[in-house]
Length: 385
Image (spheres, rainbow, N blue to C red):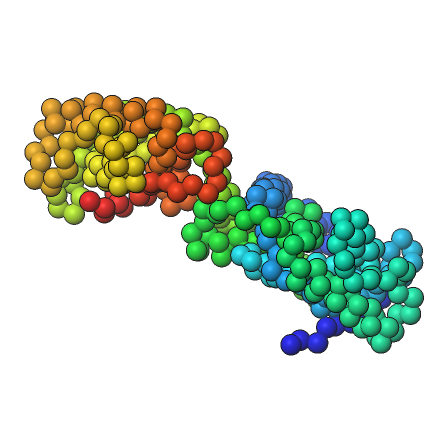
């Protein structure tokens, strides 16, 4: 186990130097850089931070364990104070870190005690001797407090690790997520980046190297690289935010059909216009076999109830795809979709792409219900029969 760290180095002087370096960097870029490129970088930085905030606030983050793993001496309001580093291990969102003063521990202890809980005592006064021995003793007391309330699963409480991130210990189950395994890993990486602890000495070295890079290199070339990286970040965050949204289907209707060749054989595809609660009207193409497969899923899940819906022509690779056949399929698909939307007991959904799904629910925001989903990540990529 890693030994908890104690930092006794005063940081105000170095923090002031870091602020000066940041100002020097921005002044140099503003003077030598292209204004349009600088505006693009600043806009993308704002978009990235806004999307990070949106993504973080949407997470239902549950606590597994928490422990005090570090301590540092800071100057707060002109006086020395001790801050304690908390390692927060979550159930599904990785390991996050934050710094809190003893006052936060005392406030939490008071709230829990007021609710009738029996918790270890938290020192009523701040640590006064900023020696390594005294700080380690205080860290041990605070760690014992955290360990006790983490072990008592009957207690409900939380810790804020960022302005947009709170981690809770709750008895209720966490909300179900709709992320794939790769998307969940990306969400964990975003949260870790937001709570990453930057040592003031490491930041000083980084800023000094960055200023040297700007002053000795091509500012616009560096700006272009930064802008490209920000564009990638924004696109990734947009996909993650969209994947986490619960999009409700208000109506679905086939509006067009076409005959295409896939893998050497003719297939018929149908464009659906799907009206949603928050994303406007989405238009997407699906193969007939996929929509027919949705009917099969509905029959498997709902039995007699789904069997009362309008029938669909049987799918077969040997069907002659005449214009009359496709017109008939459009009419029957629309009759089926209309009836499936009208039945309040049926729940089902459509996959728009790898990151977006739209659902028709029995009741709005029923988070833990299972739904039948037609896997249609774009008609040309869907190989389901």
